[in-house]
Length: 76
Image 1 (cartoon, one colour):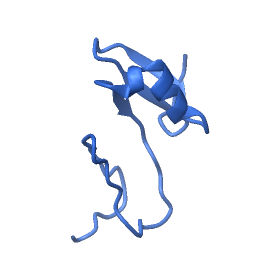
Image 2 (cartoon, one colour):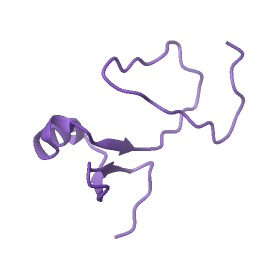
Image 3 (cartoon, one colour):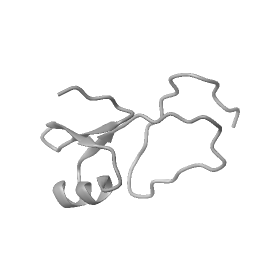
Image 4 (cartoon, helix red, strand yellow):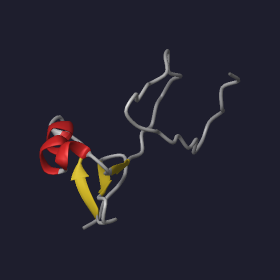
């Protein structure tokens, strides 16, 4: 199955199995339902933005790693 990370996401299970999920309106409901409320799973995704973010995203129950693939890093 061919996948692109700007249209799909990859779920990594606690056993390190990788599963491709379509990134659509029901993604987060499926993640909760099909992956034990997403406990001990990891999500790999890629997003493209046309403009700077006006605020920062917060994940109080997990960590997030951001990799800048192009553009310019802001000076915070």
